[in-house]
Length: 533
Image (cartoon, rainbow, N blue to C red):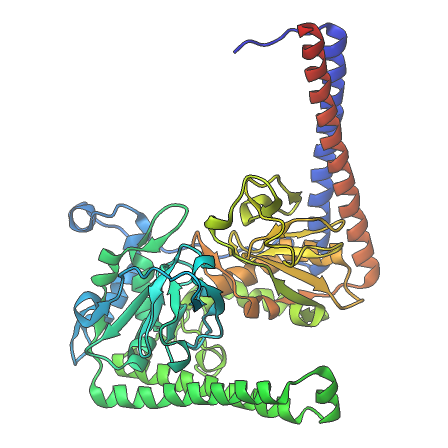
């Protein structure tokens, strides 16, 4: 490469700009780190540490020559235990490829026809579809290519959201879903039992074992088909179906009640909260029925009898009443001691959930077909950091997306997919559109300062909660309902002001550093142009 050798005075001028810019950038980073340290010191969590992972030893014959897999996670001891658990089921087992029909033929939407489109964000914790997008065929993203029918079970193939499984009901018959789902029908199990199996601890872990990839980690069809599942006895299937159906009925009744009553803040106050109490009771009863169905399955395949009540170092022990029946989760990672320790530490402070602090708004996911080279900047997770927004590579049509929400001053952008938990506070309104993978938080609680909340969101206090809810895979999915339940420690206003000032000074210096760097570049470019002339 040819390098222009400019005059010493210009070089010195450029060097001075770069040195000052670099110094300001370093001080900016130090201030941000100081703010983080100050927060942890205030919370008394500066020395918080997690637990190490397990390992296994395999010969070449037992590993690569048998499976073709050489990634260490594939051979974790827990996966062998889950396979042994399924194989030991008295009524027998078979492979998913033999038990289920996998409907993976692509369906091409028809232009001008309205379709219901189900994506990962529309799947609830208890196997229900919580909603959908309704769009014309030509507006659907390219991944909307699977047609579903009543009685189908849809199962996410993406690591980090493998538990996003749902039963297709009447309301979503002939809807479309993302190609990120497997669409299944079984000739051995009723739909309710099939759904419960795919959300069960053994099958979830065996699906996770089969995942591979780099940026997008998922389980391929060949790995998916060879997962063993127990052939549940018919009388147990009937009992499971009864509870699942009851759960769905109660949830539907609750949603209908909410729709009919049109619960606004005003009529909740006027009616003394009566309708809301009935709604919450129905939702809780639905959750209980679902958990009863899952527990029936666990009891049948022997999970409950294999739980070791002795908690060795690096593990924790939970009773049924304060684990599964309370949270609906039976994956061991959810109950790691580090999470208990975190919540125990947070009890020393006044806390609020994000639901109590801010409102959440979701933007859009227009699909790659809508991408342009000019127009409104489209901000994706890759363009978001805790220090700001980078120049995006993608734009959207200004007229077509004129009504889409824009971030305002003090709006906090929070990533919920991929690299979850990245938070950045907007200093001013800006004409950009964010991806559906980025949530907009707008603070409604006057006792919480935006800069302070942003720092807490970027700290491990929230990172650990995101890790617990969204899983630890490369591609994570953090549901808005889970984000709303995140616990935030509320420090005194004076401490929040101190932290906010440190952060504001950090960002001011970072901005000044960028300006100086740009000036240095401009000096070089101008000098070259003048020499050329």
